[in-house]
Length: 194
Image 1: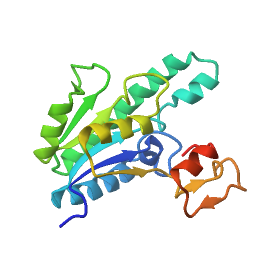
Image 2: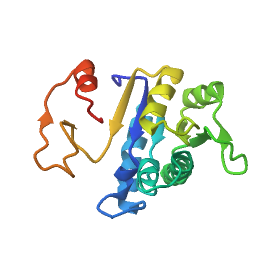
Image 3: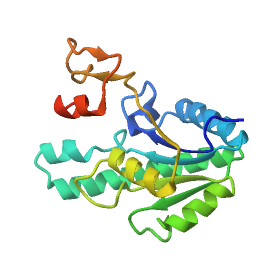
């Protein structure tokens, strides 16, 4: 019997790149969906929120002079592309998946409707939430926490390319130290960008 019955998996868009500089690495996404399919076979209900950083980062666009809200909407569209790629890869593995978007794109996916998402999960379908919260200035991590609460999951798991919590971004600061244990309050007081 699995330890959890309903989980939300937060995937960074960067995790889809594998060793590539950008985009979606076919071997990486295949490996991910193979593992997700195994968990679904155990009877675990799975929801997924995926970022778009492998395609576009709203924060980076805003820092480069682009209107931040516009940049964030572009990031939301990147999450839509990743969500559709993930849905397609899951279906190729025989796993039913449904994408729900916080932004209306009725010709492509259904809108986010909580009761439908819960019903789909109970039916054994993987539900992928696209477009973050649908609002600029909020990260997909925020969207993951929100959807986790709305779906009543037992645990939210975050999968990124970084192997833990650091004092700074280890890719940018080689002197960054990895925390073996840290409380929520400590992370907030140290202003760590987890």
